[in-house]
Amino acid sequence: MDGLTEKQERVLEFIKDLSSTMGVTPTVRETANKFGVSIGAAQKHLKALVNKGYLKHTPGVSRGIGLTHRKPMVSIPVLGRVQAGVPSLAIEDVEEYVHIDEVVVKGGKCFALKVKGDSMINVGIYEDDVVVVRQQPTAEHGEIVVAMLDGEATVKKLFRKNSETYLMPANPAYKLIRADNITILGKVVFMMRNV
Image 1 (cartoon, rainbow, N blue to C red):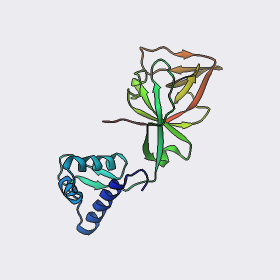
Image 2: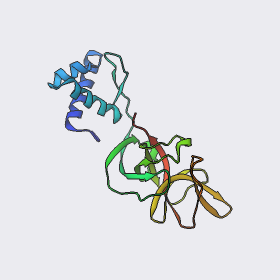
Image 3: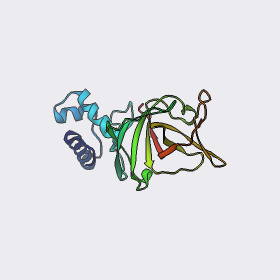
Image 4: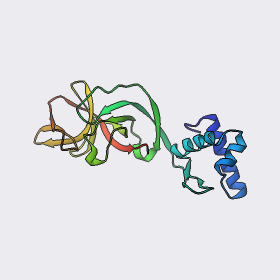
């Protein structure tokens, strides 16, 4: 199964089997007992399966683990951090992968970046959020983009007026960025937050 460790696959199969044969999903304790691990280890595996979209969880309910009706998912590489503030160099090392519904990317080539800074808070993008970016060289007025400016990357709203292109923050503490050498790397199509 895409993006799962061997143990996560075994835990998921156990949950599916119990659900189909008994009509219930296991408790965390039952999962821990089945695999001879601690409750903490079982919780870690279950949380990973929730984060990857295979399970849903209702907190405070004994049998609050449920199977999701999974849509086709794709793995998107997180290539480092992008500034939501003053532009800074984006580091392109794959740190991890995020898994999202393939409908979101619509067949385009995508990458993800962790956000650093607070220049986009008024559109709900905060420090440490992950933005998924569809690679494309152009975008429409008002769309949120990742752009390069003098070799540095930033996430901003694209603003066009007459024949000029600007990068607009979504925080009044930051100024509009004007430059002739703005290169659009892609459009932000999805945002994820670790809670």
